[in-house]
Length: 177
Image 1 (cartoon, rainbow, N blue to C red):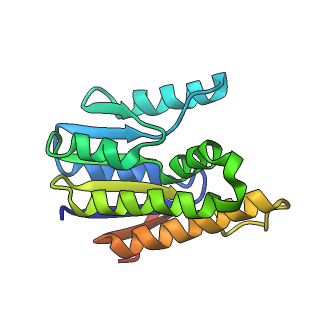
Image 2 (image 1 turned 180 degrees about the vertical axis):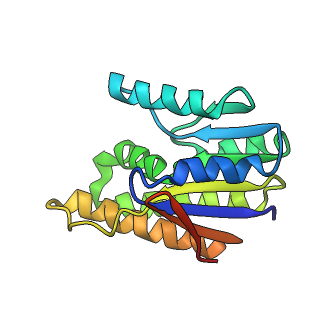
């Protein structure tokens, strides 16, 4: 298995900038696997800002749902691949499985196991970015609480698998593992 680096933190904590910097240490060519979907103008502007900040040295692959498959297809094509972000991928899965509320947790955790298997077979180093969503207030509705719980489980599973784990708080990265 290639090196796996897991980076978490709150919204706007600086985790993406840190992840990009950490990924650049592997040298070009660099892959950027984006899970976001620009479904409105505000999100489109966020995506543009990320692309401009990264620059031309990055090759962007957009994949909102089939993350494990996308990683396998990109393997051995780049010196490192940055996945930004796991939390958006999980929310995309929640929307995909929203009609199966009773089994949504099982379905999402199956997808997470596919990701874990793909990561274990990678030759290319992978840097994963994820939000730490469980440190705020308890959400008011059941689906949001399920999402928070699943995101927390996903972070624990991926952090346990990773060679390095960092948390970014107020722009300052702290290495946990």
